[in-house]
Image (tube, rainbow, N blue to C red; front, side):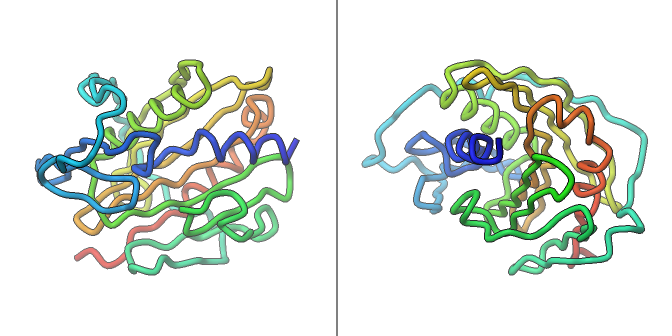
Length: 226
């Protein structure tokens, strides 16, 4: 199971490093930018870039449920990792999660975790380009559809506060090779960049362990903001 799940994720990983030659996105400041596969971006579309696929999906309106709730890092999450740009840190419970080399799950990941209690994996991807949280979610869903051939189902899309910051939580269900997977992700963005903190597992495992998965995700803490 672990091998199959990890292999699938390599194909449907969602980020601004997508299957498209470039992604048209809107920053937190309202500027339109073009993000390319090599990690660079520009305010104007480069003439040398080929168009591959419609960007119409970015114009789709998604319904976000705003929850009047605020969550904090669980007391059991005592271990910590901190990102290189000092934008965020993640607290986790080492009795439930082990750190693994990020490249074993995805080359773009900054951190990666593997569950000790079941078949659940997690990666954290951060980008220096600020992109709206809803745009990140749309890109994730589109990449999933393109790479699996099946349109994923949105189980929920909610916004709430985690350790004092607005977080968008997107939960997607996708099927591949007869297995139904659930991707449970926190999206965050500020002027320093964008972050995707995602977990994935089979649907049955997700339903059974959603609380522990959320305990990991709630360990996300933004730092360095005044």
